[in-house]
Image 1 (cartoon, rainbow, N blue to C red):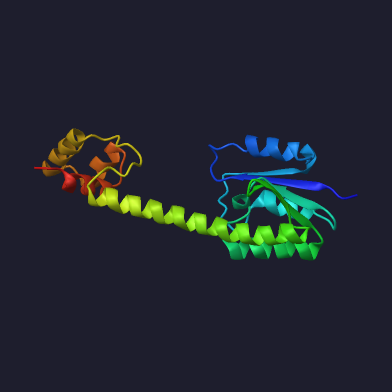
Image 2 (cartoon, one colour):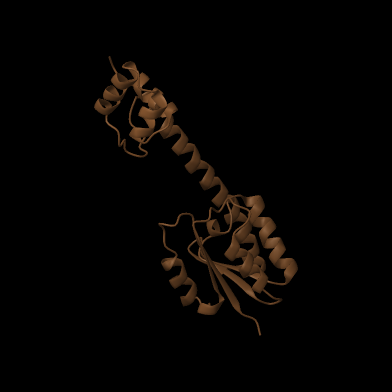
Length: 193
């Protein structure tokens, strides 16, 4: 008896697989046949739940995902993945590919998968290029790049510099502030006179 094996993935622990799981269950995947990876990047070769899902596949089964990017980032990896499934006698069904449902068990589905894999990789590369460009422009303009807010104020750094100037060991002062000595020096050097 052939069955549907569902796989969902999110890149960070703060994200949820709920929407993907709901779509997979609605597509006919049984809850027992649903594998979820939390906090695992699509660029990683090892994804524990995907490995378990692949181990569960037998001849005639179909792996079901909501979108292509849940499986990988490059066309080459996605096509190799689809070939691996084919050699196992399993199919791949992508629910939201080009506005419809694509099944690689059919010739048309296989062709669409190849085309959409290339488009998904191109989209990923364009996004990365835009982010890199945006960061460079913000850096050139001297704008904040985000990141963690500073816990230690410039006033606290100035007071710490006075302690070091009066003979306190810099390592101890930095430790008391809750930062490394290198960070303390970087912050103190960045202070405006």
